Image (cartoon, rainbow, N blue to C red):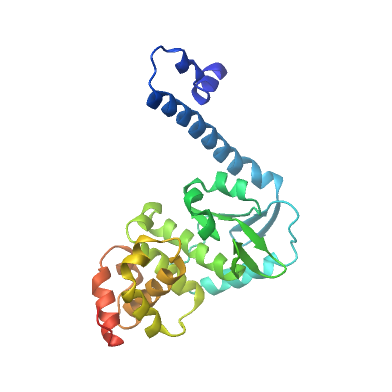
Length: 265
């Protein structure tokens, strides 16, 4: 049994076949690398909680890898979790595991879908798991590259994603990114944003560029999506369920929002 498992993970015997084309050889290499990555991914989620420092608050389990100070983290967890209690998506039914890795390799293993987005991602959410790349708890900062944002704000944003996954299912987030990310930004950063008209005008002016270069313009898109969600809820009186269940159209909300600010599309 073990031999068959190893042969599945390292399918080198396929190379013994004669007359393999270059494409076939490359596909075998890819299969080997994919299987190794998958094993590391599973092993990380199974082992890291036991190899890390853990802080528990309500149903939130935060695991810190390496020399990370535990003194500050509970205050941030309390702040984020208490604020989100008033959110209509809040759930206390499932445990949430949060990993602070402070290691790019571990982040790439535990968040493989972020491999092409490593330089534009503070954290990522998988079901009820949240993975942070770099965090300085003393400064309350979460980092990617040279950019930084308050850790508790990013934590609140990612917690919203776990609630969305719990209530609407994990794959709903890939159907309507503007709602998923817009609502998480709206709910975690409050109701106010500076210079909304200027943000919207720039978005419309550079719309194709914003849409086709998500990593470069991610924060700008999130600001627009947050304004759209805010407008849909507060001005158009759409419910949170209406948004997440696809009953509200992107163009419908954007057109109404632009009309409010007298901006021509």
